[in-house]
Image (cartoon, rainbow, N blue to C red; front, side, top):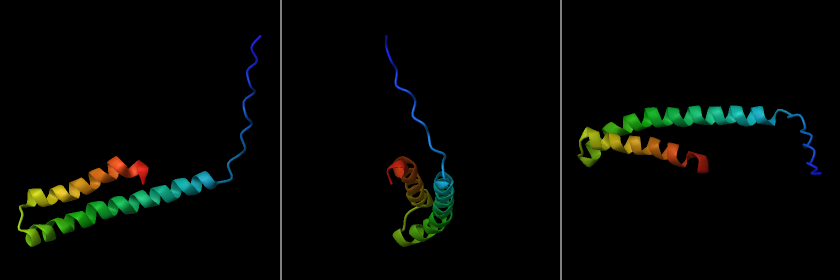
Length: 75
């Protein structure tokens, strides 16, 4: 007859998971706030400084946000 191992007894969480969750939420809030506010302002500065049109300048901000989504789980 096959004997299956007994499931491990899980210890009660001491609140560390809530700390990680709340710090992650604050980090995402700050990072997305920076990405959506500062990159919009930088778009105008980059447009004037590099003498490029607004669409190409806004591509820089979009690429920044895309890199956050692509590489976010590795950082």
